[in-house]
Image (cartoon, rainbow, N blue to C red; front, side):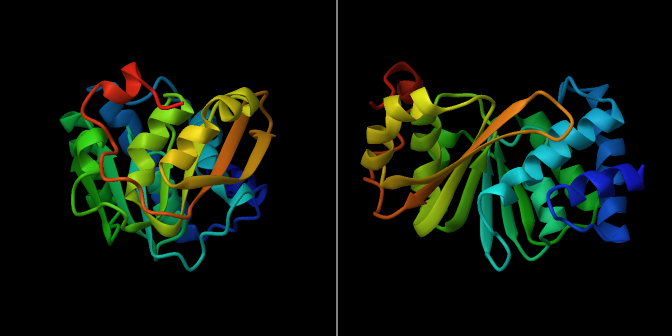
Length: 236
């Protein structure tokens, strides 16, 4: 099991220590155990979890170097992806995981405890509300694998990124049209698209797009708008 994980990590030029591999294996075992009680993921086969959750989470290294960064927030983290894999590989990161479902937050807290991870917390909150807390504009990086369109997730996430930081959404398809539709919305929120990385996950036909959005000015305090509005009336 460890060799399989380590070999795939090397495809991203990540060398995993035995300790990090053991944490990933423990994470997988807890995920499968809890998945029988609450719906965390439709993917439970070990090899699929490695590629489609662990390696996918770590694929951020295709577009940015997060070594030496201080803080990262994962919005709509679900079962902890990509936040927990990134914390395992980059232990110096201070990580906040945000999810709107309390049962998932309890799972995340259990994982954090069992893996003995430090400087990481799971928070039960809605993204629309969290952007108006003391966490606003505090993070070097904000990441999300949420499936909403680029305008909606940018409205949730860019308010949390400090000036000079980055928002990186993980998208499950090519994003040229989506960028054309919502680039002005991103600028309205204080961001600018710096780079786009489009690739296939190793040994799959799954297309993954990572968008590197640089935060260059403060986000207007009216964003994010109240619950439900970003989805009903996305910025364009």
